[in-house]
Length: 183
Ligand code: IMP
Ligand code: MG
Image (cartoon, rainbow, N blue to C red; front, side, top):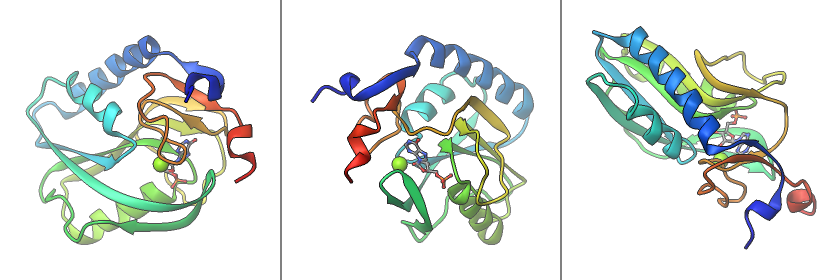
C-alpha cells in the first residue's frame, strides 16, 4: 500500500510539525509552571502528538489516557460519542489539559469536557489540539491551544486515520477524496 500516493497534497512535513510543537510546548510550560498538571490523551489519534509534546514540556506532569469512540459515517462524525472505559482519569484537584488530534465538529471535545466536569473536580480544564478545522461547529467549543488551523478537508497522518490507516505517517496530508468516494 502506497500511503503517500493516497494523498492529494502534503500540508505539514515532520520538521514543520516539530517546530510548531516547540512553540506550543513553550507556551504550555509557561502557563502551567508551578501547577499540578495532568495531560489527558484522547486515544488513539493523539498518541504521536502527545508523545512528542510531553518530551518538550520540562515540568513534573502526569499523563493519562481516555478512549472514546465517535461514530463515523465515512469522513464525518455522526454525533455519538461513547466512552470506552468506566473510570475517567483521576484529575481531582489537578490542572487538566485534554490533548486531541483534531477539532472538527466539536462534538468529541464538548462531550469529554462535559463528562470530566460532571464526574471529577479538576482545578482547571483546558484543551490542546494539533489541528483545528475552520468550519462551523456543531458544539460551541474551541481549543485553548491549537497547533495549526486548517481548511475543512479530510486529513490523515501523524496519528490521524482514515479507516484506521495512515496513523503512522510522519507528516500530515489531505487524503485524496477518491479513496473514500465510494464508501
Ligand atoms: P469532532 O467530534 O467532529 O470534533 O471530531 C473529532 C474526531 O474526529 C477527531 O478526534 C478525529 O478522530 C476525527 N476526525 C475529524 N476530522 C478528521 C480528519 O480530517 N481526519 C481524521 N480524523 C478526523
Ligand atoms: Mg479517528
